[in-house]
Structure formats: C-alpha cells, structure tokens
Length: 368
Image 1 (spheres, rainbow, N blue to C red):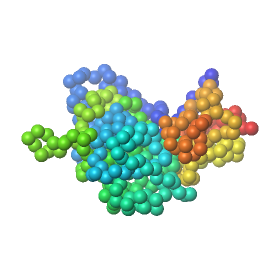
Image 2 (cartoon, helix red, strand yellow; image 1 turned 60 degrees about the horizontal axis):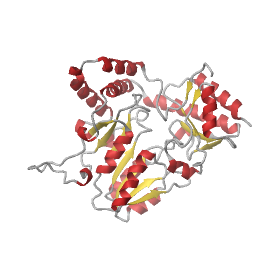
Image 3 (spheres, one colour; image 1 turned 90 degrees about the vertical axis):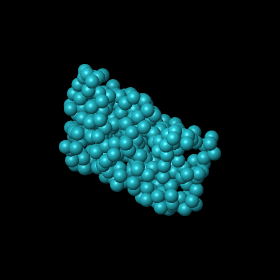
Image 4 (tube, rainbow, N blue to C red; image 1 turned 30 degrees about the vertical axis):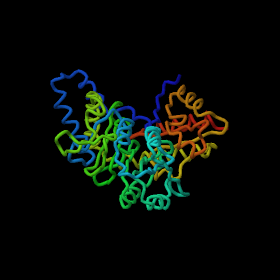
C-alpha cells in the first residue's frame, strides 16, 4: 500500500470536505436538541437562498438525490398524458422510479443522442410536438462521461409543448451558479455531497411555484379546504440535522468561492489527463471536449477490467471510480456494459502536483 493519497472520484463524492463543513458536523453532533429547530430553519433558508429560492416551502430537504427523484417521480401530475421522455444517460436513481410508472399505463421513451450532442434536440422537439408528453426527465450531466446535456434548451422546448421537466442536477450543483427559479425546470433534484461539498445524507428537491403534483393519486386537498397539498417534510422522513449542518456550512463556504474560477482549472486538469492517457493507448469516452464537460473523464484500457485497474490504483494510493457508476443505461449507450469504465473526476482546488503524479502512475501501470 502506497503512502500517497490522491483522490480522483469527486463525481462520486467530494473529498476532503472544507474544514468548516467538518467542524459544523462535529458541532451539530454535540449540540443541544433545543437548538435543532432554529438551526433547521437557518440552514433551510441558507440553502434555498443559495439556489435563488425565495420561499423555503419550494425546497424540500431530503436524504439525498435518490430520495428527491423518487418523491418527484411519484408525485408529478402528468395531466392525463401518457408519455414520459428521458435520456440514455440517466443514473439508476432516475431510471428506476420511471420504470415503475410503466405498470400504470405510462410509456417511457428514450431520447437519442446526435453526433455532436448527448441529446438530439430535433428529436426532442419532434416527440414533444405530438402533444401527449407529460414529463421530460433528464440528468443535467452524465455522471459517467461528464457530458453536459442541453437541459436549458430542453426545458424551453418542453414548456412550449405543455410538458413538465424533472432535472437531476446531482453533477452540476456547487460547480455551476444556479438560480432554480430562473432555470425554469418544474422539479430539480440534487444531493449535497458532490460539488456542494457537504456530507452524505442530505439533498433537496425544488418544486417550482406552478409545478403540478398529484400526491401519488390522492385528491391532494385537505378536508374542508381547497388548499392543495404538496410533498413536504413528512413525506421523506426526518431531516438529518447533522448532515444539514454540514450542508449549511458548505453553501456558506461556496458563497465565498468564485466557482467558475474553480471549474475551468478542473476542466484543464481533465484535459491534461485525457491527453496523456490517449498517448498511452487508452480509449476515452465522451461527446464533448473536456473544456465543455464537467471535470470528469471515463476511459478504458484494452484487455483490462475496470474493477481490477481501480483496485490496482487504490493499492498505489489513487482513488478513482470504476464499473457502471450506477448508470447502466449510459454504459449500454457507450457499449461498455460488460466491463464498465474507469472514471477520473477532479475536485475544486485539486493539486496539480497530485494530477501529475497520478498521470505518471497510471501511464506506467497500464501502458502496453
């Protein structure tokens, strides 16, 4: 086992966390229950404000992105329409709840990529123009390749044709400056432990003011009232106060960080790694150049299992992602569903020295 520790799996979870996040988690664990209510409200407001959400009722705090997607898919009102459009790049957390809707008579259809985009926007518009699509459910960025989907264009097209949009923002929150209300998606799901720099166990679901929900088929009206119910605190269980304290500290930390100044150097590091691996004979995957992706690179080496390669690198002190990255659909689209891929993803402020050391180890270990 090597003494070096080079972490290159930030698309899985960020590490190390900012020290203020570590401290906040420890303080919350030791804090008095008398403060829980006040701390919850403060953290809820701060997280909502970070995403441009003025009304905290529109931000449901959840145990993570998986929970957020499950609640959203379960409660979205399709307005009597019977078709849902999704992409081939989805995380299993999105795909699995969508599949369950097929039993209720819903048709799930997969939007294809084009030669130069993860989604063929002409196909998107063609499908929407048929008038029977109730929902477009897509990820903002493929967590395998880092390719960004044209989600802003999809939102505009979907709304033009009366369909709602559910966006899985797990890979972009924290990295991009996002105003959910301005973005326009009806539902946005995210987790706190990746680009947001928070701990595991906390995430959120944003519901636009006019987002349509049916509360899983119930009438959604309180007795003796015409007030419509929306999913809320009680629908996902108690919020993890310790994780929420960490997320609160993380968004306050990010408010002081110029995020584009972090994203561009991270992309540059991925470009360096990609060039070196291609020179060594590795096959790299992705539609866009590294400068247009999230700071993630998926690659394979002929004759090598991604799991065995990841284990070898781990023994040498380098942590990367491997296998299917919980995105079997993406690997089917890439033709890599049998062995999976190695995934390198860099984080905010990643050390250039570490990247150079990692490149040297990877090239030396796997070059033919």
